[in-house]
Image 1: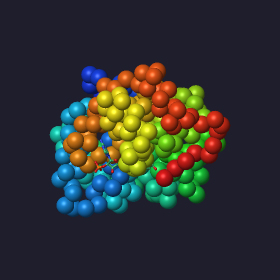
Image 2: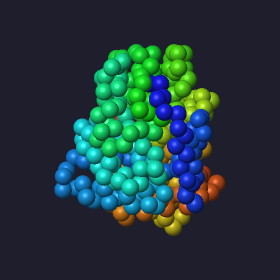
Image 3: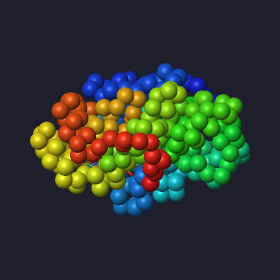
Length: 287
Ligand SMILES: NC(=O)c1ccc[n+]([C@@H]2O[C@H](COP(=O)([O-])OP(=O)(O)OC[C@H]3O[C@@H](n4cnc5c(N)ncnc54)[C@H](OP(=O)(O)O)[C@@H]3O)[C@@H](O)[C@H]2O)c1
């Protein structure tokens, strides 16, 4: 996927939200918003758009979507939320592995652009590795500012680095939360060496993490919520962007609060005791 447009979509930093810088200099907030499961129910669309707009207005100016989500429905929700704000938001979308072929990726990208009602995707990711060789996937043209991958483990990244133009990969989007810390011994150091940011998906383990008694207790002792603490911990890692999904304004507010919560050494130690870091390298976990 050779970038057709190398324009640097550097966003204005919003006070209080740390930024992460791509290899080409584009700077984005470390906190964005996900959209999986949006666009599935017409009656929920208004609230989903409202939650995204609220997040954008609070500086959560990066949105992650995919052609897979509601088979394009989530991209349509994003389009409505982007109306009048396109220049303030960094847009990430993903192509199905079976659409990542020589011609099919261009067509899939055009369909995503039409649903998103924009003329450029800021970061276009291969959603997961399929049967199409990586060497073919990276040679796509399209209206994309930069391209990257998702769910690729260290050995896949090593292979990608070896194919022509593979080094231009801009990010790897992987599962990362307190209960799933495997990348600390694999993908995270590999991406730092590349160098490229990691985009952490499902930072709440799809919501399951937020009821964990230890997390709830530590958050209470720290005077915050489980969601804010779980997210603050993710974005305390340099070069990591988190993309929690929320379809309610109150949830978005708790997400924004994570940017203001410092993970002190004491807090970090308490979280490490409850959610121990990996002792050795394990295969990449994914949903
Ligand atoms: N590349 C990949 O293969 C891949 C895989 C999975 C996910 N992703 C991306 O990552 C994004 C995030 O992951 P995810 O959607 O799986 O799950 P998640 O962000 O870990 O969790 C989302 C759930 O947490 C709830 N929530 C959000 N804020 C909350 C708060 N403050 N308090 C309590 N509950 C809260 C949401 O509820 P409400 O919706 O009701 O607000 C929703 O049920 C996705 O939307 C998608 O964009 C990528």
